[in-house]
Image (cartoon, rainbow, N blue to C red):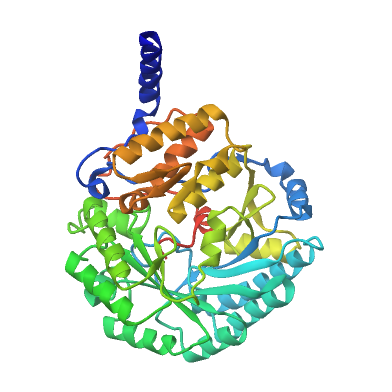
Length: 485
């Protein structure tokens, strides 16, 4: 008996040594102190790039593959009226000639590529127009792109059709055109209602203008309205954040996103912060308090939490695209800078407008990159989808991951439970509020276990400010539209 106990002790000790880099700190408030930093989980992780000379043949095979029962589509519009300081998605300034030419190329790409889809393949359950700023296009351009997608792609009868929009330049003519062309969900990146906070980040409209615009949009009963809010912006105190929450809820949207600000390398905000121009930048602890306040406020108002960052007020808000993209379903992608998933491959469309246009006019798919996932990709998708939804069933990994890996996951989950990040209910891991805030760290750890990696320990090199590694725009588009926009 004593010998067995000693062997078990040695096994547990070795397990501790291997997994200690992923352990959460134990303490009275795990939401604030579980980790030193939030980890970024890259969507292309563990994928092998297809050599340029083999890309055309590999792409033809991808197109011939018939996907499973779910599929979505993404259309990218890479233009913005101005570059907000925090944004990592900015690519091109608005130009009437450039946007007109781009519309022609985009329509041609959608029409030609849709015609190559195999007969009998899965219909498209959600279509997302993101950017950039799709609403920067004219009413006629928006309507033409949307009608082309509806005519050429196999959209389901209840397809969720989302348009990302800004408060400025999105007038009634554009809204009418979008509704006529099938848009049934609009996502508005408000970020904050506070005029001073908005202006410091390059937002042009005031609090009053933002509220007036959203009230008019809310009157369009054909649409699900989603408001994006950011916490952690410079000058956004807890009092300002509480006012942002109250204002958003008072406007009665169908859904709300609460995102923590990431300092994306290369953005104007990151450079300004590095130069000391924003001494009031929120720390990670400040962000954790904002997340707690937001979740508590929405719960008290009767909202339903659908994911770690998204809440639903009415059944009109389905959040279908964001849910399915995290489950790793195939995503057809169109437009310069877009990224998609198909047949176990991820792909990027050229972000350079000139090269993109030349390729489309030459009859080629303007690919900038194509990569293929490894045998563990389905397991990673299961982990990501589960943790993003707030509950992961380890039983679903039994056929996707080896037993030693599952044992390590169970052991690590027990440590996280002791730290207050989750509750273990049989094979299910239910995240606490703290676990939801730190979900990317949990995904990061399980991903490393699936790949057998020895990963450096978490560090606090960010100086207390949440940061995110540089990543290509197209891959952020694939990963999630629930990000800074």
